[in-house]
Figure 1: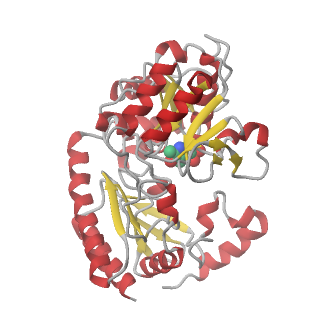
Figure 2: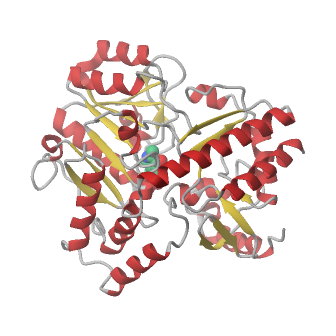
Length: 425
Ligand SMILES: *Cc1c(COP(=O)(O)O)cnc(C)c1O
């Protein structure tokens, strides 16, 4: 595979863009080598600027559930764009989008559109604090909720501790209001509520984690979050920016039959354009300006082109699609597990719907400490081996892989063969 053009572009990029990329994982630092620059995508495939084609398991980190450049989504975007890109005033398209989203996810009684998942979680936290008049928020180590200051915190292992910032530039005063627990640790959650429940504004969680690799909730974990929040007057926030419309039409909350107080959506909701949503209980969301005292605004919020991509995408999701993704996923899951067994590599596969991770540790992976036990060197080699064989896999061992409507059984089988070869070498 020739990468001359990508290499040249990366050199130019590094001179003017931090590390040559506009989001860190794209720089391939964790896996070595250089990132291919993508020229185009169609369906399940992407093509780089040197003409190499890959089966794509990143899907823009989630949005591309219908595949790249779906003709109906593209024409919806073109139609909206031709009528003007942005007005900063209400438009019909954002109403249609909001009606669709609130119908698909019934816990969303009232929503706001924003432009990124980061903005959605940041705003949901502010609303929870405004509504409860409390300061503390609880998150789980290894869950990613965007890069707002108070969410860039994870604790050391074990029981809840006062947070240490994960990033330079986050003040300790902000970090101290974020308490961190281990994902899936119901006892620690209950103990924390017993100790400090009356100070807690919100618990935010990825109901199925994608941002430490795919880690499902153990039975009773999500229920405990919703229930403890209810008991203590705190707000449960399901961050479904990744799981929303990926794990089913009503996201993880539909799949597990739970009703959180607030929900955040992004990625698939915007069909590939910058669009995200936060919303939930009417009484809580009525705190947002101008109905209430919690301020939140955005020049491009509910942008007509972005919501048109969202509408066109959501309208094409149905139960048959999720059934098909389940079948494809089972095939990939069994194939990857078989590849690891056949090559004697210590690994485990975890999957929920169309999210999957091959962890380079025996497993099971229940929380971040488990995920951090992986052999990073082995993952890096695996990633390079896949790329050389035309498989575009997430360039971090802490990211779930995604597939969608355009992946075929043939693509999956090709991927399994490539994985087996990559693991063997
Ligand atoms: C991607 C992601 C975010 C952040 O969304 P951005 O649009 O990248 O700001 C937040 N939460 C979860 C669960 C995500 O996967």
